[in-house]
Amino acid sequence: MGKAVKRVVLAYSGGLDTSVIMKWLIENYNCEVVAFSADIGQGSVEINDIKKKALKTGAKKVFIKDLREEFVSDFVFPMLRAASVYEGTYLLGTSIARPLIAKAQMDIAAAVGADAVSHGATGKGNDQVRFELTYYSINPHIKVIAPWREWDMKGRADLVRYAGKHGIPVPVTKSKPYSSDRNLFHISFEGGILEDPWAEAPDDMYVLTKSPEKAPNRPAYVEIGFKNGNPVSVDGRKMSPARLLAALNEIGGEHGIGRVDMVESRYVGIKSRGVYETPGGTILHSARRAVESITMDRELLHLRDSLTQRYSVLVYNGYWYSPERLALQTLIDSATSGVTGTARMKLYKGSATVAGRKAPVSLYHPDFATFEEDTVYDQKDAEGFIKINALRLKIKAMADKTRKD
Image (tube, rainbow, N blue to C red):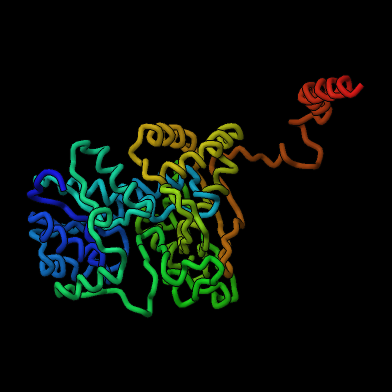
């Protein structure tokens, strides 16, 4: 196991994996374990009693930090400005949370003088990469302990047996035979009954959203105000980032917005099925694009969009603190600095559609776009424009004809 470890900071959720890991670290490394839990909006049920359980399991100290506002303002909103959607479907709710948790964990490690950090991510998933890339970007010499890559336990059954042997309460039940991860932006489900990609996810699994079939029969309209690319108000009421997202989660969930069922490509090379609920994020993604459509220059918008896939892959794979993501963010933030306005969204049985958009400084002018007579655009000018742009196509056609002859 390498050099001796005196003190390790564990990213601790209070669930089965990290509860077992805490006891395992104490037994196998004979070290102090400091538990760190981040409140990023996973809900009071998961945050309550974490300190008591961690101390009972053997933690020397427990730190719980409320990171909800930082999570939304410094991680979710920059990612939304980039219009990030992984593989055309996933709004990256789990991916974007990991670098914040890992950064805060490293802050605790520095504060308590720890010589190692640990996490509960498995050796098959993406989270191990996301956590550890962040650790090393902050302290290249930190020791990382990833128990799933060290111990001889193969799965949940082994963990349950270990927990029973050491008197650790087990939160896993047969009524929920899958794993889930929740934060203020979304909730994810994977594993267990979802491993068959042909089987429909059971409706009672969903937490944040109503079934579209059971959603209200009348649509709801919501107006979202943006300033320099960031949402700042809902129906005219200014809110902090976390409160705004929570408000949209509530109204979006009521109308069945934001359910996604996909098979995605993990960074480690494995295909994995994930089911996600992202009600507020789905609304914000469409609303921001609506305001962008009347405030962003065409070429600037197209340039940003050409970088979106690259940015999304960087976030998904854990490169939040990489120089290339930071450089892309600088360009994206400059491109979206003029995105100020309001989008009116219509929410109805699982769909969030744009019903209107306006901006104090808009690039859309009815007198330019009208099909009626106008004074700013001479339609005859289009003939020369077309001929110049068709020149290379005409030359190619002549060359193709010559080859055939």
